Image (cartoon, rainbow, N blue to C red; front, side):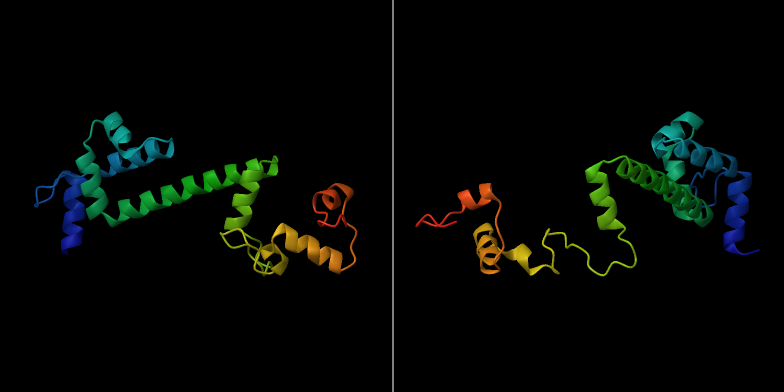
Amino acid sequence: MGVAAEVATEVAVAGVTKSGKNYLSPADQQLVLEWMLKGAGPGQACLQLGVTVEQFWDTLQDEPAFAAALQKLFDTLSQNVLAALYQSAMKGNASAQQFWLKQRPATHWTTVVPDDGEDAANPLSRLSDDQLVDECRAAGLDLPADLAARTATPSGEA
């Protein structure tokens, strides 16, 4: 029998290895995961089961199967949060919509807005308001009356 198998057998049978570490039993591992799935942290889950946090950390460190199960649990919980974010976005929450689109843009989109808020595909986004008004005038575009009044030249031209 290999060392890993001996350790696993000792953990399953006695909860203690030759190194003196005290591990969670397989049943306790399952119960800890169930408590954490309900929203408890490791400390609270251990408290509910009457086991120590040290047992949790030792088991997590030395039992790859428990570590993998905990990672799957966190992935599941993250998917729950992602679903709630999506639902919030679909109900009109603009912050949720922006976060969703920044983090999960459609795969066919080729332009992603950089985090600094500037749109790399739109050179007009780098212009000041005055420069943008000048560009509009040069292109022969009519400005809205309130904007034209606020941006009139010193000679009174709009």
